[in-house]
Amino acid sequence: MEHNSHLQIKPKSETGIYHQITTKSANWKYLNFEARIMSKGETWEYDTQDNEMVIVLLSGNFKVESNQGNWETKNGRKDVFSGVAHTLYLSRNSQFRLTALSDTLDIGYGWCQVDEDFPAKFVTPEDTPVVIFGGDNATRQFNDLVPPGFGCSKIVVREVYTPSGNWSSFPAHKHDERLVDAEGTVLEPIQEETYFYKFQKPEAYAIQQVYTKDRSLDEIVRPRHNDVVLIPKGFHPVVAEHGFHCYYLNFLAGTDQCLANTTDPDHEWIYNSWTSKDKRLPLVTAEMNKQ
Image 1 (cartoon, rainbow, N blue to C red):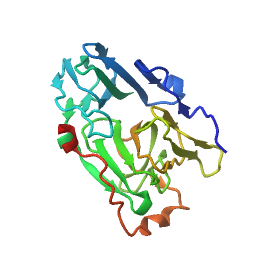
Image 2 (tube, rainbow, N blue to C red):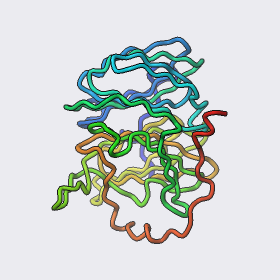
Image 3 (tube, one colour):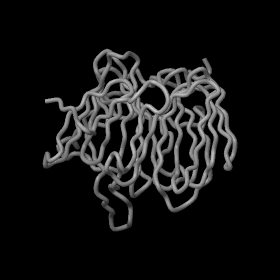
């Protein structure tokens, strides 16, 4: 049964800030997220204050002037299916002005409160790690925008491409209780997560389940273009509608800057079942940004 759930957030408008998710509105502790469309010459001024922030270029070009440095995109992708993101990491107490250089600029950004500082970092498509993960019809592409070990406090960012008909975020996994082994290695953190979806056509959709083992949370949602799904806890697999490739941008923030997780034990065996990779991948490359 499909539910209209508080987990699924529809875009508010086509211009300006069209998503705004805060710790208060989501009723959680760490993660904030916004998406914004700007017109050429429009500026956005902001002070990160006690937060670290990551800005992801979804389409268009921008320049940023700040007390941490100045940056400008030269080969921003036309849309998320036409190349790899540019990514800007800013530490707390960063004051900046971002200016749209293209007719339309689309950006997504997340932030979380931190108590330590790291250097600002601007990552181009050419320097973004790309990973083909999974197998068979659960193969997908990760562009690791802010991976573990990036040099930040809490935030992790990844964009994921799931080919038509494939499963993603699968085998189902969770990150809602902090588990540490005897050596102090984090086996599972507590992390809140957003899935921000985009598709090549407006009629396309994905199906996402969010559930806990005791089924106290058990929801199925159908995100469409520009929808956001919130993951406060539990397992959260995704499947892309046949005929349409699926993109989602993940922001995570919580107790640890990592991607450790716990697999649903019912699905653990699947890791050893794959026999091939989906040859449709990669769906996007940094070379596409130059076209």
